[in-house]
Length: 115
Length: 112
Image (tube, rainbow over all chains, first blue to last red; front, side, top):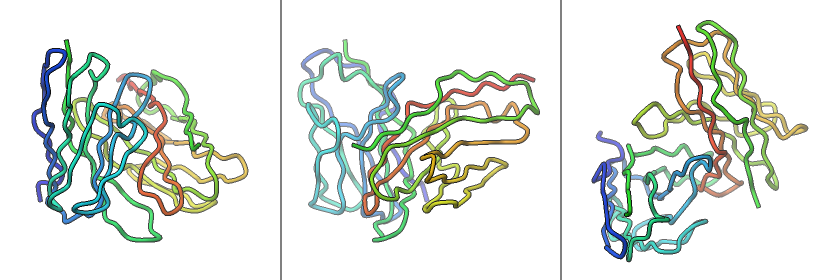
């Protein structure tokens, strides 16, 4: 298994540009999520999905869109990039078992710089 | 809302020293508690977890005990190695939820 993969690893955007960060997992996990990591703030949840066709907002959703057309893929779209979106983005996935503690598997991250 | 507070770093230790990284939380009910580790240039990996009061999670010589009375989940290791140098994150998930609430992370530097 490749686990959780993310592309690209690095990206530089100009203010106002749009782009999509890709995330894929091959573990048949129902639950997938996106976090951003900023210095001194830990990771914050952007959006999540509990299965194909179902998405919901996390703590910091503004400026981002997601969709979940397949179990494997969960892309994150930046609609109009802003310098405040400069961050490291992590995708994560986990099983969806009611009543259990959920270990989340993280991808290697995408480092995004918006100038 | 839920929150996690962990000690600020960096924490610098010599090899074979004892490690403690403090973590306290605020949450309703009985959350699950986790420690994740991030090695340089990599994503986060689960280090250990505990799902109910007085549970002890352990892995790779690291331990943490779920203390409901003090709402704490401190990470300890008896003898650190240079290879333990990383950023450590304490996190919780509320009952029935999958989303994680993270602390700000603590960077550990172990010197030979």
